[in-house]
Amino acid sequence: MEEYAIQVKDVSKMYKLFDDNKSRVMDALGLTKKQLYKEHYALHHMEFDVKKGETVGLIGTNGAGKSTILKIITGVLHPTEGNVEIDGRISALLELGAGFNMEYTGIENIYLNGTMIGFSKEEIDEKLDDILNFADIGDFVYQPVKTYSSGMFVRLAFAVAINIDPEILIVDEALSVGDVFFQAKCYKKFEEFKAMGKTILFVSHDLSSITRYCDRVILLNKGRKLAEGTPGEMVNLYKRVLAGAADVEGIEAGEKGALEPKTGSVIDKDGMWKSHFTINPKVDEYGDGKAEIIDFGVFDERNLVTNTLQKGEKFTIRSRVKFHSKMENPIFTYTLKNIQGVAITGTNTMYEKVDTDTANDGDVYEVAFSQEMSLQGGEYLLSISCTSYEGGEFHVHNRLYDVINLTVISTQNTVGFYDMFSEVSVERNGETILN
Image (cartoon, rainbow, N blue to C red; front, side, top):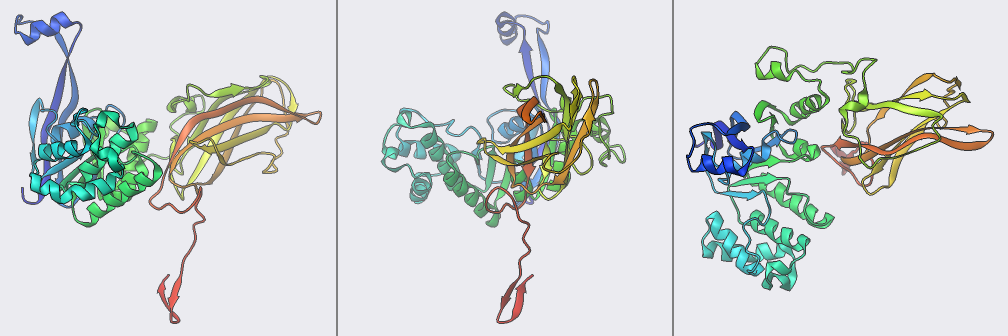
């Protein structure tokens, strides 16, 4: 056990699903031998290890079992089968502030939480200034936490968990609390933990952070461990799972070659690309109906449909447009905006000087924009449209504003919205020290 901080051994978690409260009570009191519930397994025979000093990421779709296994590791839940062995003191950033007493002051909750984790009063005394400086909520720390804003609450909860100096840190989607400056402070502390050789188990939907910080990544799918490997390998496999382009059954069965990526679109010519995306339920769609966007999709450099893209790699935005009226030189467009609604980039066939000829009633056009992804890691919104000029007047035939989101994964972000991909050289006294 000396080599490992965490060992998850054949862990399963089953929940009983009852049709009504009467059945639940009868089962709890043992009043019937008949099974009145359906079995739902959140975890199936899960096994993995985390070595001391290692940063391991857990990724997977909603319902994959990520939060469940973290709660079992931290003792919040008990497994139905199997067991977990821990070697080291854990601090968990799961549901921030879950152990806070709303009637207590911030100071009192610091000592309460520290004691619950297993620290003495003297140890908490030593860390108190670090916690207060990190939280940076001023004299509010002497007020009951029920008077705090939500931002102040999570800042204090995060400060307590991150400054108690654990040997093992468990993080579940907790690095995005507070404003941008507090988030920067959180990530800096996270990097300090890595540099100190702490053991970190990290769950996040932010694949850029997973790629940047993790030594190894474990991919979960429907309560099972699907695969584990380098961050790049597992993020690419995760993208294929999301796109329906992974041989999940073959991987689970350990079949040779099942992990190998396939090339080419997973959608045939008669299929629908857009069915593989979560469409914005509040998409702003309008136009005169003379043309209709019947399908669209985003494809990575392997030509796999996905909304998760790697910075620096080539990707393609495709759309299919059916015409219900004759028109000259229809214009096809796309725009990428950040989540604040600022248009970052985009183009159209007119800007690109592409002659689209005459579209007749019933024609179906397929348009592809291919380019290298130079945007910083983060979340973006895609808009697409078909427009034209008729008699010198501009007309919108079909426009889909913010129809889907795109996630850009980056291991290194620069200043601003996009990366210039600069090449850097440094000389000292005429000698090159960095090239």
